[in-house]
Image (cartoon, rainbow, N blue to C red):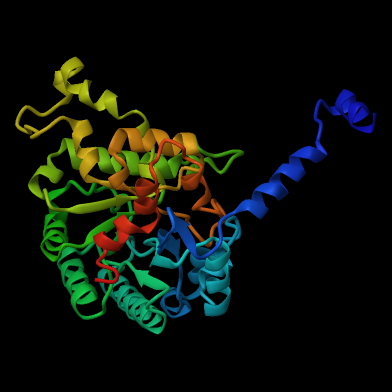
Length: 359
């Protein structure tokens, strides 16, 4: 009766059984070691973040707002305390995190950005060397200065043991398809290492995305990834660099959910397409050469992503320490359309090969 009276007053009922269901789900969450078909699988999380105070110190008073924004839960945990981070990974059934730092330096001048990147890559390499069985990392790049970025990427891979590079969704007003960035993509292709695209939002839409719901991230981040990938496809960048390995955060944004529209756009609106750019295959086919993290929350979303791009192109992602998904392996096991072999690949086998972990 108490719940009924509350409902009559407010229209909302909070049911104790819901809390019981959540508790039961938490108890059933996977723990290490993760086993599929009787075989141990090394789970590798491609999407996990960190910060270093030494790099932020170069920004002076701005560092706190950039590295520890008060609006973001988990921001403080981005400064890794080894024991706490390992305990969190154990609780998530994650054997290894591939660390990356979202680029807050693209708008800085060349020299300052280069100093930030140098510190971050050195600190990432140092951290990974201290726990090589638990951490790998993507390098930071001074992408606004592609000549520097090329050097930084080569140093990171050949001398520091980093596994590729993390980039935003663009640099200022420039899309990644701009020829300015071709030397960086060529270097990544030559080194055989992936680029992890993590969006920063679409500032041009800030006014429309204001209000309740943190829409700048909720909608803006997946939208930027959708835009970035679409430009790489339609501008012919992926044809120019066919061996380039790209991993897209947040399941690739909205593109895999509505990719078939891309195959029809130039048929319907030819004036919106450049006749000089002749793609070598249909736009949707390029998705099958990209990689996408599994941070899309539900078995149905994962089923659809796999149907669109193939299980071989999906890898584990959590976005830790931000609490988007604190049990990232669970919805992979819950996706009944996946075979055991496909689950094992998504959980870690594909990424181990892609990043040459354990090779």
